[in-house]
Amino acid sequence: MKFRKFFHVAAIMLTSFASMVAHGKAEEVTSKKEKKREGELARHHRHHGALSRDRGDATDDPPRRRHHSSIVPDFDSDDIKNSTHAAVWPSYDQQAQQQGGQDEDGPAAKLDPALMAGAETSIEPLVTTNAPPPPLPGDEQSRYPWKRGIVTTTFWIGETATHNNPVPNRSSCWDTNWARNYGGNDPSDAGQRTGDYIPASFVPNLNPFYVALPYNDIEHGVLKAEASQVIPWFPKEYKGPTKSVCQGRWIAIRFGNRVCYAQWEDAGPFRTDHWQYVFGNDRPRPNLNRGAGLDVSPAVRDFLGMNSSDVTDWKFVDFDEVPTGPWARYGDNNTFVQNARSGGGQVVEERAPRRIFDSILPDLHAPVVEIR
Image (cartoon, rainbow, N blue to C red; front, side, top):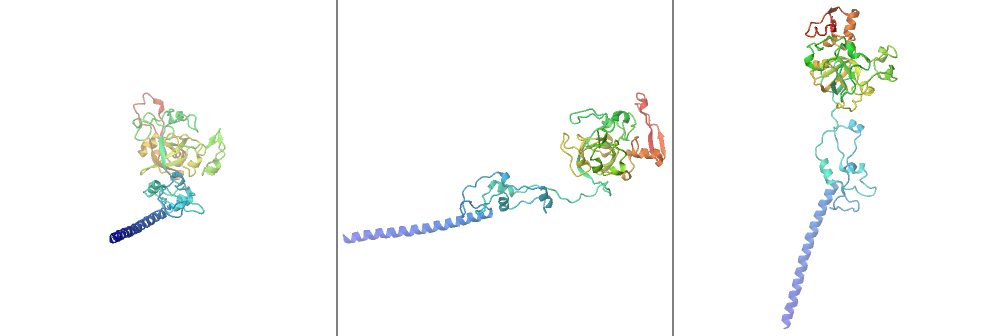
């Protein structure tokens, strides 16, 4: 009986001892796994600047969601201009510090994982390179820089008002009888024009190569106050307080590999006061025609081979920079014609070739001026 009780007690003790050993090993394994997991989490959060505000140890609690606007850094124009790369994102720690994500006494706040994943994907450059484009026709030395990538639309003398052209073009800002002085309406349809870039029905009395820019130097019959300060050629061209120094000015327009020359004869599109763009470094302001900053005549459009609305470059030129071309043949306002008539060249006046319109409009002939 005693032996039986002894063996029973011994069996209980052995069982308890085995249970204690097994439990100790399980705790040791669990402890190792937890330490390993905590170490991995700590490395992960340290990498992403995501330690908890409330505790110094790593945590896998769900991060508090923050608005993207509180994380994404703001780039002002100076930051972009001075950057050595097109687009450089700060590190996550820098982002949190810049936006107040770190307390004075505590670690950085957690970031939205979706935002972090998005920041690691490739993005389009914020700015393009400042390297100059390859040279093109018209890039020869000039005192005036090119205005590049300007939305350019077509307008014409006699054009009626439309939604995108609220002012009719029977008059210009400098000529109340523009259409009459031109000789009629300048047709927009290329089928109603000749290979010499003039209307098929008459020879114009003014240069068919004309443009409009969004500035008028005359207001209420006198020069605007800023005109003498912002127009580069003002001192040389000033002819009195009521005379425009912009009307008739020559500009170059470049489209692809072609360069056309035309005279400034009206103000627009849409604005007459944007001297910061016309004479400065501003871009055209938004408008109904996709931010157009230049209007050109049908003759300019056809010579360049552009669409009725397209993108061109343009710049002012002095007259001695303008080569001869189809823009030098017609018009009482044309500098080439004026110089030829005043003795700068031999003037040959001939009647225009007779056309089918002659019997209908016999009085619309005008002399063709050739410079030899």
